[in-house]
Length: 399
Ligand code: FDA
Image (cartoon, rainbow, N blue to C red; front, side, top):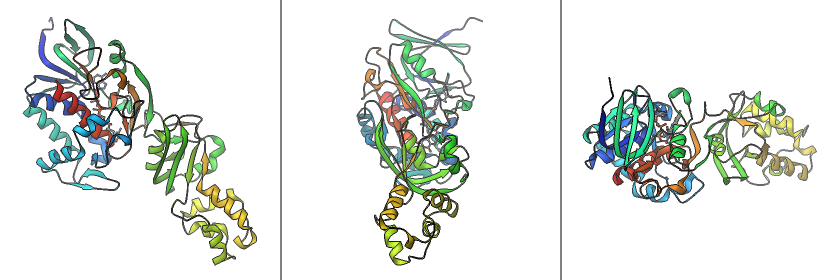
């Protein structure tokens, strides 16, 4: 059977957070919108997000908490659709929520409530969500975009790329956004796994024996390609290296060859070890560290510092040096656990070719890119969904 062409005002590629939200915004303003996805149902990443409770925004979401080759790009969209705006929608739907920590807002119940809200917003806007359709040829002629999607041929004056990045491929994630961007002459900033556990080489094997140990730290990158950054949260030793929120955060700023610094005792004042000696010269390093750190970690670090016997046997200078080592323990990760484990993809469609107000491509009128597909990557903690909502809103109201 010959496929018939269906006309819409906008075709949104990708029924994730950004695509659904954008479609609902455009639909609410009267546009005839279809959302196309190859997955069998919409919003799969929303369902697994925040451990099933969806950390749907962060009240501190300003552009400073996003990585991008253009640090200011996200400012406009984020300031025109704020965490308070999304929260107002969540409350309108009667979804119970709580602030967990560091401004992170989660559902009390389930991420399903957020997805159901987005689907309902699409229904109200008359949006068709067409899942389970594999994307074929995408073309552009006479001001119209044409998309082959499964057995259907769709045409519209507006095309929105909202297919995310390649992190978690087993959930249907792909790099198709970059292929489409390049097809239309847009540049792509080298994508890389971000918010991802880091792996340690063989000579750091001692730390691997600590697999399962978690402790609050400050993780730092002093001089990475994306500037310097420091995060005070928990770090977790794994059988392959390091994970936990502090490490996921710093991983976005890390690249191979860059050293990572970890302060194992960020809450202790300078000189604390000398003070500990004064208070009790007969105490050993293991016990002193054990008062502040998990036992296994205290033992491993004390062994590495090799200050045998009581603190009283060591000079203040030696103790200060040990304290300095604990405050800036250097790791040289040899890689990350890659897209299979990365919560997001950093890099992506270059912002240089997009309007920061509408997310429209400056050289291809009617073409938009939103969400994770774009070179804007948030910190851990609800920032990436806020970018999905804000960029989706920016494009949705412009269509
Ligand atoms: P998203 O990836 O959500 O959607 C893209 C859509 O495009 C998908 O439906 C996909 O099937 C479709 N698609 C891809 N390739 C296609 C193709 N070739 N053809 C057709 N369709 C295609 N963020 C946050 O702020 N708070 C949180 O709690 C979490 N938690 C979290 C947990 C886990 C395990 C992960 C992996 C990620 C998070 N995130 C998060 C990140 C967050 O999920 C992510 O930033 C957003 O989902 C991005 O939304 P997008 O709509 O841009 O892409």
